[in-house]
Length: 179
Image 1 (tube, rainbow, N blue to C red):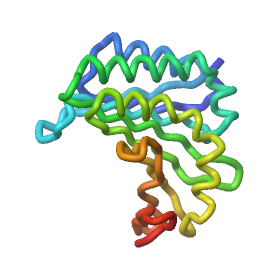
Image 2: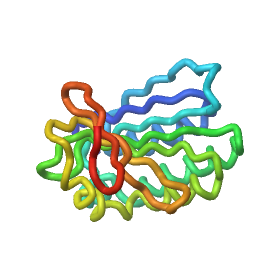
Image 3: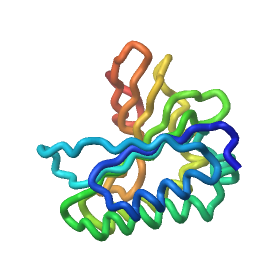
Image 4: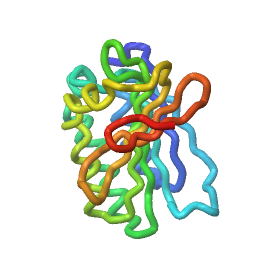
Protein backbone atom coordinates (compact mmCIF):
# COMPACT_ATOMS: atom_id res chain seq x y z
CA UNK A 1 0.00 0.00 0.00
CA UNK A 2 3.07 2.27 0.22
CA UNK A 3 2.81 5.14 -2.22
CA UNK A 4 6.48 6.11 -2.28
CA UNK A 5 6.26 8.32 0.79
CA UNK A 6 8.96 7.76 3.38
CA UNK A 7 8.28 7.85 7.11
CA UNK A 8 11.28 8.32 9.39
CA UNK A 9 11.55 6.37 12.62
CA UNK A 10 14.37 7.31 15.02
CA UNK A 11 14.82 5.93 18.50
CA UNK A 12 17.07 4.88 21.34
CA UNK A 13 16.58 2.74 24.42
CA UNK A 14 13.57 0.74 23.22
CA UNK A 15 13.02 -3.02 23.05
CA UNK A 16 13.13 -5.03 19.84
CA UNK A 17 9.42 -5.88 19.98
CA UNK A 18 8.58 -2.16 20.40
CA UNK A 19 10.67 -1.38 17.31
CA UNK A 20 8.93 -4.15 15.37
CA UNK A 21 5.42 -2.95 16.32
CA UNK A 22 6.12 0.66 15.34
CA UNK A 23 8.01 -0.29 12.17
CA UNK A 24 5.32 -2.77 11.13
CA UNK A 25 2.55 -0.24 11.71
CA UNK A 26 4.32 2.45 9.67
CA UNK A 27 5.32 0.03 6.92
CA UNK A 28 1.72 -0.49 5.77
CA UNK A 29 1.13 2.91 4.20
CA UNK A 30 4.74 4.15 3.95
CA UNK A 31 8.25 3.16 3.17
CA UNK A 32 10.20 3.44 6.43
CA UNK A 33 13.71 4.68 7.18
CA UNK A 34 14.74 3.43 10.62
CA UNK A 35 17.61 4.91 12.62
CA UNK A 36 18.83 3.80 16.02
CA UNK A 37 20.48 6.74 17.77
CA UNK A 38 23.18 6.51 20.44
CA UNK A 39 21.92 6.86 24.00
CA UNK A 40 22.94 10.16 25.58
CA UNK A 41 24.16 9.23 29.07
CA UNK A 42 23.51 12.75 30.40
CA UNK A 43 19.80 12.67 29.55
CA UNK A 44 17.05 12.19 32.09
CA UNK A 45 15.19 9.99 29.60
CA UNK A 46 16.09 6.33 29.09
CA UNK A 47 14.21 6.12 25.78
CA UNK A 48 13.27 8.30 22.84
CA UNK A 49 10.94 7.75 19.89
CA UNK A 50 10.63 10.13 16.96
CA UNK A 51 8.25 9.36 14.11
CA UNK A 52 8.11 11.68 11.13
CA UNK A 53 5.02 11.17 9.00
CA UNK A 54 5.55 12.28 5.38
CA UNK A 55 2.10 13.86 5.08
CA UNK A 56 0.39 16.87 6.69
CA UNK A 57 -1.43 16.74 10.01
CA UNK A 58 -5.17 16.87 9.48
CA UNK A 59 -8.25 14.76 8.86
CA UNK A 60 -6.73 13.42 5.66
CA UNK A 61 -3.80 12.00 7.67
CA UNK A 62 -6.13 9.95 9.88
CA UNK A 63 -8.14 8.80 6.85
CA UNK A 64 -5.00 7.71 5.01
CA UNK A 65 -3.06 6.24 7.95
CA UNK A 66 -6.30 4.79 9.44
CA UNK A 67 -7.45 5.09 13.02
CA UNK A 68 -6.53 1.43 13.66
CA UNK A 69 -2.88 2.18 12.90
CA UNK A 70 -3.02 5.44 14.90
CA UNK A 71 -4.44 3.60 17.94
CA UNK A 72 -1.72 0.96 17.60
CA UNK A 73 1.03 3.65 17.59
CA UNK A 74 -0.58 5.40 20.59
CA UNK A 75 -1.00 2.11 22.41
CA UNK A 76 2.62 1.01 22.06
CA UNK A 77 3.88 4.46 23.08
CA UNK A 78 1.67 4.48 26.20
CA UNK A 79 2.83 0.96 27.06
CA UNK A 80 6.46 2.03 26.61
CA UNK A 81 5.90 4.89 29.05
CA UNK A 82 4.17 2.61 31.55
CA UNK A 83 7.05 0.12 31.42
CA UNK A 84 9.69 2.82 31.98
CA UNK A 85 7.87 4.56 34.82
CA UNK A 86 9.68 7.59 36.20
CA UNK A 87 12.81 6.89 34.18
CA UNK A 88 11.13 8.65 31.31
CA UNK A 89 10.59 8.46 27.60
CA UNK A 90 10.40 11.37 25.23
CA UNK A 91 8.27 11.20 22.12
CA UNK A 92 8.24 13.41 19.04
CA UNK A 93 5.46 12.94 16.50
CA UNK A 94 6.26 15.03 13.43
CA UNK A 95 4.19 15.88 10.38
CA UNK A 96 5.30 17.37 7.05
CA UNK A 97 2.83 20.23 6.93
CA UNK A 98 -0.42 21.06 8.63
CA UNK A 99 -2.97 21.74 5.94
CA UNK A 100 -3.22 23.37 2.57
CA UNK A 101 -1.47 26.71 2.91
CA UNK A 102 0.67 25.87 5.95
CA UNK A 103 3.69 23.85 4.84
CA UNK A 104 5.57 24.19 8.13
CA UNK A 105 6.86 21.07 9.84
CA UNK A 106 4.64 20.30 12.87
CA UNK A 107 6.09 18.54 15.92
CA UNK A 108 4.19 17.23 18.94
CA UNK A 109 6.76 16.99 21.74
CA UNK A 110 5.76 14.84 24.71
CA UNK A 111 8.21 14.63 27.61
CA UNK A 112 5.94 14.52 30.64
CA UNK A 113 7.24 12.43 33.55
CA UNK A 114 3.80 11.64 35.01
CA UNK A 115 2.24 8.53 33.46
CA UNK A 116 -1.27 10.00 33.58
CA UNK A 117 -0.27 13.32 31.98
CA UNK A 118 1.71 11.48 29.30
CA UNK A 119 -1.30 9.31 28.51
CA UNK A 120 -3.64 12.29 28.39
CA UNK A 121 -1.31 14.07 25.99
CA UNK A 122 -1.10 11.11 23.61
CA UNK A 123 -4.87 10.64 23.69
CA UNK A 124 -5.63 14.25 22.75
CA UNK A 125 -3.53 14.58 19.59
CA UNK A 126 -6.18 13.50 17.07
CA UNK A 127 -8.64 15.98 18.56
CA UNK A 128 -6.37 18.88 17.59
CA UNK A 129 -7.16 18.58 13.88
CA UNK A 130 -9.60 21.52 13.94
CA UNK A 131 -7.79 23.57 16.60
CA UNK A 132 -4.23 23.66 15.23
CA UNK A 133 -5.04 25.69 12.06
CA UNK A 134 -6.87 28.27 14.19
CA UNK A 135 -4.04 28.50 16.75
CA UNK A 136 -1.49 28.92 13.98
CA UNK A 137 -3.36 31.64 12.12
CA UNK A 138 -0.84 34.25 13.25
CA UNK A 139 2.40 32.42 12.51
CA UNK A 140 5.55 34.48 11.97
CA UNK A 141 6.47 34.75 8.28
CA UNK A 142 8.66 32.03 6.75
CA UNK A 143 8.02 29.62 9.62
CA UNK A 144 9.56 26.25 8.82
CA UNK A 145 8.87 24.40 12.09
CA UNK A 146 6.27 24.60 14.86
CA UNK A 147 6.53 22.64 18.12
CA UNK A 148 3.55 21.86 20.33
CA UNK A 149 4.09 20.83 23.96
CA UNK A 150 1.61 19.29 26.36
CA UNK A 151 0.83 21.65 29.25
CA UNK A 152 0.38 19.59 32.44
CA UNK A 153 -1.17 22.51 34.33
CA UNK A 154 -3.94 23.26 31.82
CA UNK A 155 -4.20 19.70 30.44
CA UNK A 156 -3.90 20.74 26.82
CA UNK A 157 -1.56 20.98 23.86
CA UNK A 158 -0.22 24.46 23.17
CA UNK A 159 2.08 25.85 20.50
CA UNK A 160 5.39 26.56 22.21
CA UNK A 161 8.07 27.30 19.61
CA UNK A 162 8.29 28.36 15.98
CA UNK A 163 11.49 28.53 13.93
CA UNK A 164 11.79 30.47 10.71
CA UNK A 165 13.98 29.92 7.65
CA UNK A 166 16.73 32.12 9.13
CA UNK A 167 16.90 30.16 12.39
CA UNK A 168 15.07 32.77 14.49
CA UNK A 169 13.00 31.30 17.29
CA UNK A 170 9.61 32.61 18.37
CA UNK A 171 7.88 31.59 21.60
CA UNK A 172 4.10 31.46 21.98
CA UNK A 173 3.15 33.57 25.03
CA UNK A 174 -0.21 35.16 25.83
CA UNK A 175 -1.71 33.94 22.54
CA UNK A 176 0.94 35.56 20.34
CA UNK A 177 4.39 34.76 18.94
CA UNK A 178 7.29 36.65 20.50
CA UNK A 179 11.04 36.61 19.78
